[in-house]
Amino acid sequence: MRPSSRLQSTLTVVTALLSASVLALPASRPGPDLEAVQACATKRPGAACEFSKQTRALEGTCEAREGEALACRPAPAPRPLSREQTPEE
Image (cartoon, rainbow, N blue to C red):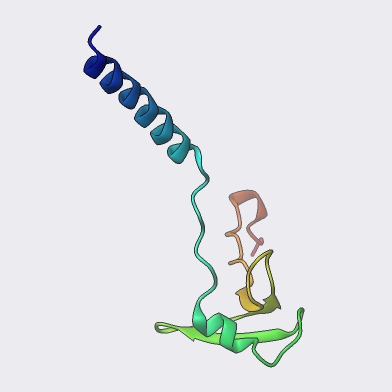
C-alpha cells in the first residue's frame, strides 16, 4: 500500500467514526419561547400564568426544566374520550 493510500484510508476511517459519533448525539430540544419566559418573569415556580402565541391564548404553570429559565408551561391538552368513556345520554 502506498503512503498516500494509507493516509487516505486512515482519514476515511476517522471521518466515518466522527460522523457516527455526531449522529449518536441526542437532538437538542429548543428552549421555551420568549413569551413563555416573560409570562413568568415576576412569578415563582408553581404560579399560574398565561401568554399568547400566534393567535392562541395559553394558560399554564411557571416551571423551570433543568438548564432552562422559568417559563409558562401550558397544561397538556385533554385526551379525547374513548367510546367506552363516552358519557351516556
